[in-house]
Image (cartoon, rainbow, N blue to C red; front, side, top):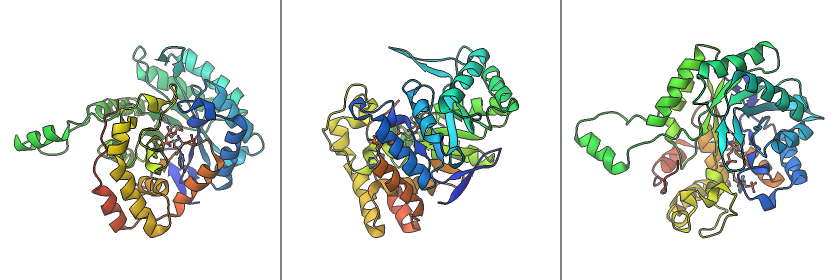
Length: 346
Ligand SMILES: NC(=O)c1ccc[n+]([C@@H]2O[C@H](COP(=O)([O-])OP(=O)(O)OC[C@H]3O[C@@H](n4cnc5c(N)ncnc54)[C@H](OP(=O)(O)O)[C@@H]3O)[C@@H](O)[C@H]2O)c1
């Protein structure tokens, strides 16, 4: 598989990684299976998808334990990327960026992952109660202590709040030129500039897919101009872009899609033209819509690494093959004019 370089520390990873979240968190619980997920982890590593993205919050904790089991006999094949600073309680998700906590969290992650070094340690969410420089400073000390090789920041949920289309037309009519600035990403960019003063950022993780392209506006260019890697979360649109979901199908209550406005029966039906477009492009290459969606993410820059999530061996293998799919300019133009996704999020 093609290799890509992540950020300041110039660490090499396979062009496509593996998101481990669906194995333990966020998706249909009744389909979770530890043993089955091990198959997905090995299938990904066997094909060069070295970057395994996990978090202490997934499970909580069980996802790191699972990744640790897979790593045991083949640590050298993997690039371990985990996260800290976000805790899942029974009712709420809370951020904790206190330096002492971050250091304890790292030791606990190392134990669960059965390794002595985390390749990429990411701040899952900034804690509004703690200056981000303090949190990042503690993470930098973990690099100095040899427990972590590089640092990243997650900006998931920092969805660009773009004015709706109608408002954009109005803004243009009023003489406002250029792309509307994305308020939430502005916050992320400020955070990034602040932590860069403390210790170099190696990667930013945020949502990027054919139906959520907002990061292309500012976040991706910011990363590219500073040699920072970009990990594209939810590159398959939480599974929708694979074309395997049926409008109107239900989701179990703990599945994030049960509350996601794009997964109501109405919006799943309304967004079918996006999948149809990916299918059309895929037909020219003998590829699935999901593989086209991943190849589109790969085409956004050499600093971008999609991390599709799956708990299934066959899907991990299918997703890895997207690295061989080179979309043409014609393909990219066809995808660029697909209708924007309907249904807001965040
Ligand atoms: N930093 C953050 O706050 C944050 C937030 C969200 C995600 N992430 C990271 O980003 C990763 C990717 O995001 P995600 O997993 O939420 O969304 P995603 O990759 O867009 O989609 C995952 C969904 O797609 C399905 N799927 C995967 N490959 C498929 C294929 N070839 N055919 C059909 N369906 C397929 C999976 O099904 P199965 O589960 O049944 O395999 C799962 O339901 C996560 O795993 C996590 O590591 C980070």
